[in-house]
Amino acid sequence: MYYVVMPKRDIRDNLATEQYLMNQKSFDEPLLLFYIEKPCIIVGRNQNTFEEINQDYVEQHGITVTRRLSGGGAVYQDLGNLCFSFVVDAKDQAFGDFKSFVQPIVTALQKMGASSVEVSGRNDILVDGKKFSGNAMYTRNGKTFSHGTLSFDVDLDVLTKALNVPADKIASKGIKSIRSRVTNIKPYLRPEFQDLTTEQFRDRLIKEIFGVQDLAEVADKEYQITAEDQAAIDLIAQETYRNWNWVYGKNPQFSIQKRKHFDYGTVDARMLVENGRIKAITFFGDFFGPKDVHELADNLTGIIYDRGHLTTALAKLDVNQYFTGISQEQLIDLLAQ
Image 1 (cartoon, rainbow, N blue to C red):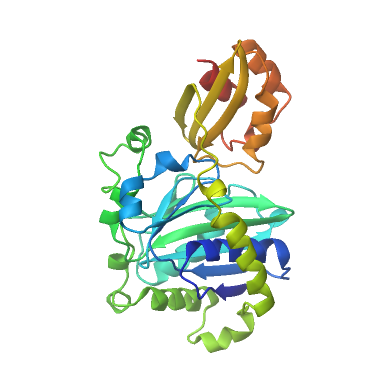
Image 2: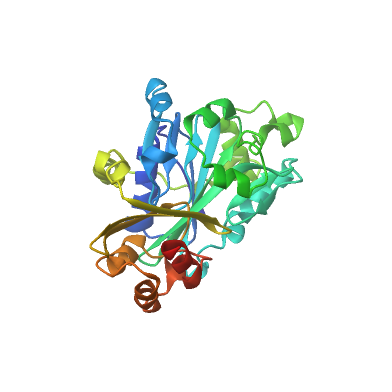
């Protein structure tokens, strides 16, 4: 396995780096990336940005907002958070199998003293029943990346103010507030690791994962971003992650909203129905799926809006390719209810 330590502290640059390394570079072993950001919110590929964030608070506090390629829900990060990403050949890893992807991180944290760390639900890592890591996945052109957060020393009060967490999602967890569900991993580590900076925490994780005492022992496994790489990365960041249309422009208003939280994620469908037909439909939510949900929307646009025609249209498609863990019947029930 190779690894990359990203020096920049802007989420847009780091997501662009991740995308570039996945799509433009080839490695003969899996790749592990680590990056740290200034305060930011990253919404999932299929989410409505305006609904996921507290816009006034975000603007007042200078919090960067962008959208990622992968599905899943919105996350808040600051300099107390460490992000990691595994890039592998898609044939070597089942899409949606977060547990296998994050196992090296889980094992390393357990070695550092957090013995109760476990993967829970579809994409969370918990310690003593509280979430400190959320993960998302994306596949394209034979490659898959699974990236996640590690709340080491995040300002959790800012997190709860910056994000708008839907009431139905909180209710599905059986809790009264998002603040009572999240935590930092720092207090659960052994005392010698509780005074580390986020950068030192990152380096210790790398040592645990590679089983070495000094990073010099795995210097041949570290990939350094070249000037040529950086030029291509800067272009991706500008065209995508700093692009208003990518971050906010995917949020048109629709006259009908159908929303439900399933075990494998929330699906929020917005439809404009005109003359009895679906004129436009967009899917938002923190669901996952290897295929782009816009392809599904294209197949539903123009059909008569009733259960029979929805059933006929969806019978030609594998719904699970767009919404992992959600059946065709469940989607029909949501749209036609």
